[in-house]
Amino acid sequence: MQRLFAILIATALFAGTAGAQELTGRFLLDSHDGGRVTDQSFAGKVRMMTFGYTFCPDICPTTLSTMAAAIDALGAKASQVVPIFVTVDPKRDTASHLKEYVQAFGPSFVGLTGTTEMVEAAAKAFKVRYKLHPPMTADPDNYLVDHSAGIYIMDRDGRFVAKLGHLSAPEDVAERLAQVIDGKEKAR
Amino acid sequence: MRRRDLLVGLAAAGLIRPTAAAKVEQGLFVHDRPRPVAALDIRDNQGQMAGFDSLAGQPALVNLWASWCLPCVAELPALDRLKPLIEPEGARIMALCLDRSGAIGAVNTYARLGIRNLAVHVDHHRRAGEVLGAPVLPTTLLMDRSGHEVARFVGPAQWDGPEAMALMRALIKGQTLNPAMAPPPPAKTTTAP
Image (cartoon, rainbow over all chains, first blue to last red; front, top):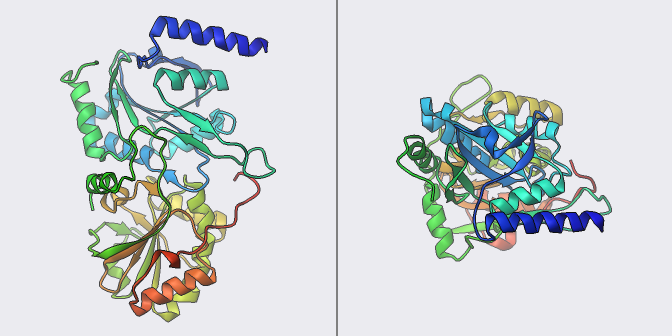
């Protein structure tokens, strides 16, 4: 109860400072290397972010492959972008598991997790909705996660620039990133 | 087919709800008419060309998978069992790995699973997902003997059961497929992988 109260207060404070409808892009999470990071940790880099989970039971979106292909398409400019995957399933997606997972998509990929509260706050800051379903079997770890998919582009200061659909073509994602890198597309 | 075309198609069919959760319809989708399949640079475990033209005029099942996709990995053993059952009857089974690490990921996964029959096929330029219009994995293409895609199965399936055999035999005979021919989903495992 005490914890719930703390969350309510934190949520109220958060809503008070940020405004309920604004996509702030703020977060405090744990990186796959174990260190605690915030949106400020990536200052100076353009960020390409998505939310998801690795234990997809039936079908897995290829969003991270799209992001990896966009990084490829950027060529020399790729070093100015950090691709970030935030899990909405921190119970199963531990830091070490995330590290192994994101490495499949490229050395620059960063996997982020945290406590349930930290992940909830981060998802809220991106207006990402997700829902953990009840376990499908007696095993409490066998459950589905629904989440809103998409690729978020944030500028070098961490400000939201664009949300692209998870079906976007890699070259379209790369083009938007290049515009942000070149300063042609600004935060809203 | 380009991913954007797929997007437009799906949107027209009312299958995309932009703000909703990433729900994708699963099952067997039979195309109104066979679709040409774009050429892809596919390599074997020696780096040699092993594209769709290597299917040599036979109907084929082409399964798109990746080592990071757990349901894909889970259905590989069934495809491995299907291959020696159906290939003598005149169809080909190709498992196409979309891993970015190339053949390494495929070879390691095969070794871990004890895969005996499936050959290693790798999407060399990592464009299969986009070129074939597959936003989710696993996706399995059914191609006729002229190399056209007649249907695709989205999601995992029991590829070594009687339903899959019947589906493949219909494909071999050139019969018109229908969604009721879909193989059932795999039995749910009781533990998370």
